[in-house]
Amino acid sequence: MTPSESLRYQTLTRLEAVLRLLVERHGARMTLGEMLAITAAMARLCRQDRVTIAEIAEATGISKQNLSRWARKRIGESIMLRVNEEDRREHDVIILDRNRGSEHIERLARIMKIEPDDQPI
Image (cartoon, rainbow, N blue to C red; front, side, top):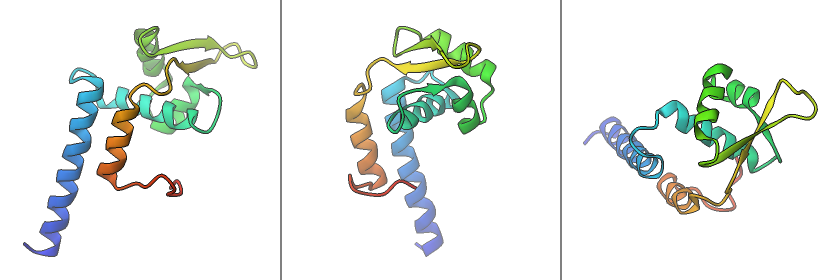
């Protein structure tokens, strides 16, 4: 196998493992956009107390309208929305259980070969 073929194979098998984990965690019916929105929100909530629909939209490129629709569909299951006190037009996304799915995060870290003390990108 050439270095190029090896790189291609390794990349695709690692991506396959990540996608398999995401489907296991979120189910086969959830779109990649929804998974991206959840991941973006959770990543920001690791570093700050709240995240808005607008911040998730900016980070992901998904429209605020689609994110609001997604959030309303998921209310009570894993998130809640709260009116932002500083700007009542905005809604903060609150993850109900920050530790939910932590076993999947740990498996994902192993797949991606991330160590606990690695610096963020």
